[in-house]
Image (cartoon, rainbow, N blue to C red; front, side, top):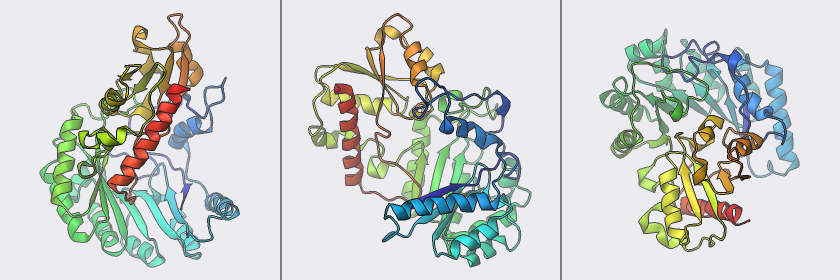
Length: 415
């Protein structure tokens, strides 16, 4: 059982300065407004979750007593639910900036480790590491760290991450790998840290005994997920297509012994995501209920082809049409994406992703502007397995999870 506690922290200010490729680099926080989401009240655009997405850009680090109070409250809730009896919780400390810049980090670690809990610090870029810092955190008992590497080449880190002490950062990374669980990650930028550069980083990480390595495709356009930005992060860079990115993930995964994760989701060894869309797994689709009503499913560019293939098999009467919007990630769909739809292709009942950043009232207004009243229904939270660092799952678990998710989706269509 994991307990997450957020330290807050401002990107670009509480992290040693923006990396050149940072998602938050060109954001004007004064111009951000809540989009709306599944958690919003029926007649109000904006809720704690919506405002939290924006506020994490502006919020300074919490004081230590605030963090401790949050942890105590969550531990008490787990105890009341009887979840602490047999499961020692894992404390995961997160931040909108960089945990290693948190001024009370060592005090926080000491207090948490007094109780013997597994402690995961997620995440750091390593730019805060000074001589002796990594050794001290290891000695204090930190169990796991998530570390944004980009490259193990000091000059690459100096130039692209604005790392003032790259040699110390890399030395700290090496010490963590050798002594505790280290989940490394790298944003892959074409022509900068891809191919030979990423492979040399992988060689170093494998030699140091890294636990996992997450490859993250660089996003430079709004359709790839830059919902906060009105302009590119790096003008001269055209990110890889998803197919090109998949090829790199396959190469790294096949070449090295550590676990490779991918964002956007991809794991060719487990047919992830959407294992049930593969022809060899068609037999499992017969377990799904029949479709009885017409509906339109709105989804993302990356998920759309998988969902269409599944419905081509199970929807023999063609009652459901699937439209993939111009957004790679379904949970980053906004009102702007809905405005682009041709309403002549839309049924009266519309399934939108549960996590879409759209208020239901606004979605109904946009999708009924042709005079046809349409009903908006939120789909299941996930259609494929949740994919987190350190979480292992077998292909059979993936298939069972996806079957349950698609059953929930079909139930929403039929009712």
